[in-house]
Image (cartoon, rainbow over all chains, first blue to last red):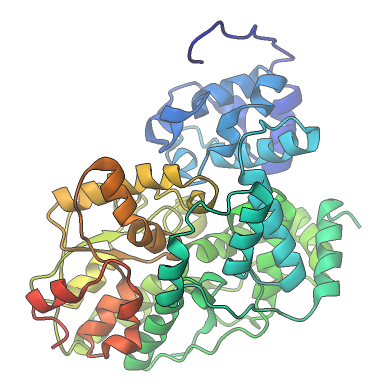
Amino acid sequence: MTGGMAPPIEIGSIGGGLAVEVNQRSGASPMSCYQCAKCSSGCPVAAGGDFQPHQLVRMVQTDQRQAVLSSRFLWQCTSCQTCTTRCPQQVDIAGMIDALRGISLAAGSQEPHSAVPVFNEIFLDAVRERGRVFELGLMLHFKLRTKRLLEDAGKAPTMLLKGKLPLSAPRVDGKDEREAMFHRAAEGGAQ
Amino acid sequence: MSYTFFPGCSLDGAAKDYHRSTLAVAAKLGIEMPELKDWICCGSTAVHSTDPLLADALPAKSLSAAGGSTVAVACAACYSRLKAANHHIAGDPGLRARVAHVVGRDYDGRTPVLHLLEILCREIGLARVAAAIRRPLHGLKVACYYGCLLTRPPEVTNFDDPENPMLMDQLLEAAGATPLAWPHKTECCGASFSITDSSVVLELGNRILAMAQAAGADCVATACPLCQLNLDMRQKDMERKFGCRYNLPVFYFTQLLGLAMGCRPDELSLDSLIVGPKALLEAKGIGR
């Protein structure tokens, strides 16, 4: 943490709680970590995070639920998989982060300043609705939702001119089928 | 040779140039690439960050429609998601059953998925590629940039060495170019943060371009729509923010290969590059 006094650490049951949930959700095994920090060394965004990947793994081990689920880093991770690839203990750290994002969203405890959850929601809606992502529509929708209409507005004419923003929106048949798929996935795919 | 082509959303959008140049190169090599009918989005990072089961189910739906024939992919993100779904489903009968319930039909996770680089280097072979070269890219120093998702994690993609992949280097060398040894082949460009927080892309992309320049590159070659877009479209912004000058064209590797095989610039959509390659290609006598 930078500046001020660090919040008190509340340790839950070691190896229980969050570590078990992460494992069930993603198959990742945070309890295998021995804190070599190789994940953080290779992480492209660790330097700007509130916590670094190896710290988050330790906090999952010690079940520091609130601090983990509200960490800004969950939404700064680019999912580049460098951590998972280099971990000498085969901890799927990127998978762990994915699982934590889901748990954080379900608990409503995600940190509020990231636009990533909004982007993900719009992306999923587009896939459910059309079967494919229409990039121009996705970007406009995102800009309206986040009130950032002017950001990158100068890029649009160049992109249009270069043929990089086609105006026709793709659509695949089978919307009802996709709706049902999304619904069954949200229920965990149990028969 | 014939492969079922899964283009993915970007190749019908911002990466139409990648799509066009891929088909142009395939035609030169006599590779048929009929498009997979009614393919749907692979889900990309947005879905695997939200719902792991759906992240396996979306690719399963498309792959089960391929009828077991080998699926060819150009986009690194699609490749990663299709391969991850195969890896998960083939290795876990319980998950396979849950995915079958979500999709509405069983899929065994065994439809082969190959990236274009794998097809060209390992199935067509470098000798056949070299035999199709009409205008070698002599004197062109290229930083081959693979990005994250082709190589990582290696037990899922089984693509090439995860720290120092060479497939694109070998291919462009066969086309007469000079691929450079440089350390940022697989560093992350920031990917979809281009939309949610572009400052991340400026920072990460700048590190990649600075390293390519320090290695003496004339240009960068990519194999991923987001890598290309981030390094090309935001290059001017990086120059402004960090006070440097790159002027490095960022090609898709298929565009360079197509040039070497004698395709016309319009067949390769060279006009859609934002950092224009004309001066560089003229200076090197390429494409004449």
